[in-house]
Amino acid sequence: MIVPSFLLRRGALAFVAMLSLAGGSALAQNVPTTFGTIIGNGLLCRDQTANFYYYDYLVKHFGPAYKHEGGAFWFRTDGASLWGREISEVMVSDDTSTYIFVGAVAEATPEELQQAIITQVGVHHIRIDTSAYPVREAKPASRIVYFDTKSKIYCAKYKPLPPVQPPPVRSRPK
Image (cartoon, rainbow, N blue to C red):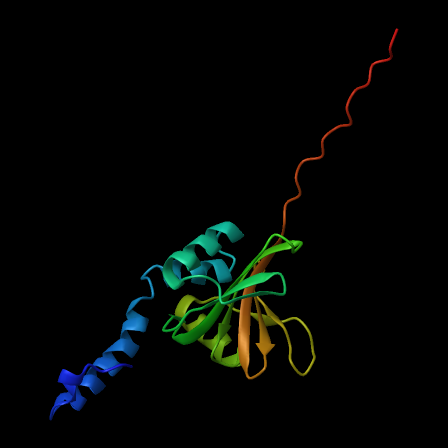
């Protein structure tokens, strides 16, 4: 942070420190009040999954995606939380994937995230495999998976294919 010289007088450093702290909390205040409703319900597959809708929403409220990899645009969501857990990133599918999806990285283990979701909204994710890092799934299709020491929750649906056009009718020349 660049500090103007007039602020370097006695007592001004406390003021500068206070501005720095306020700047950090300002990020959390930029999270829209609709984040839980829109992103949270999308992650639980409680709404239509339209990647362009989520992409536009995230660009509007969090700025451009910081990376584009793995068939998704990744957005940093500093200060955001869902179900009482910090959400550090949200990803939205691009048009190269056979799925349309919205996902998020939670700063919690899958077990902690699962319990938070049960407590807040009553949705239960059930283990669907017996591996050391089991995938958890809720109806209609939301999943929680391990993501290193964190968890990733997502809703993925098959992308609808465009309608098949019948072949053109050819007429025989007479």
